[in-house]
Length: 156
Image 1: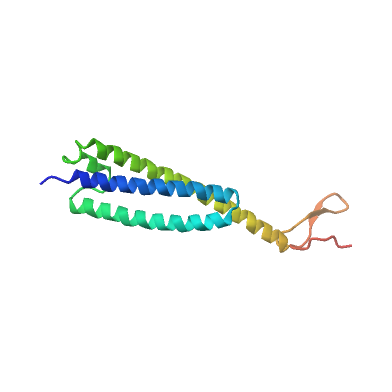
Image 2: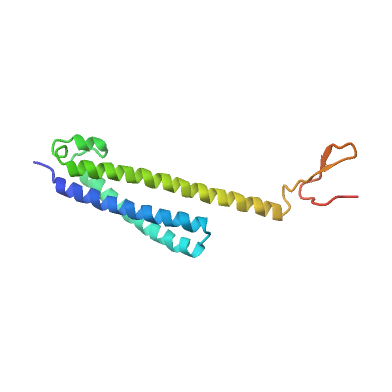
């Protein structure tokens, strides 16, 4: 019995469309973060959550179909006798793999942006609270003598 390569191609194509949609949302999120547009970011986050849930479900269905049809759940499936002659599956698999890598890279960039903003915010809060605000004052001999943490004024 041969595999329905048309069904596999359809599932890969649908998954590829979802990953491309997610890529578009991630790019919009990056712009919203850079411009500090919190309203857009909130609505994009909701869209992203929905698309990611759909992708998870769709990828799970594809993996289940592949397991049911005794296909390896990795690129080795392309060597299966029924799949090997189907050039469209090779193309879709390669595009899907590349799109996942691109999305992962963009997601890492977003994570770096968010972590950087968080770090800057925490640093500002520490300064405003007077924590770790240690101005180095010099004594009569020109040597630095720091004040206690949070003490931001000179004592006479």
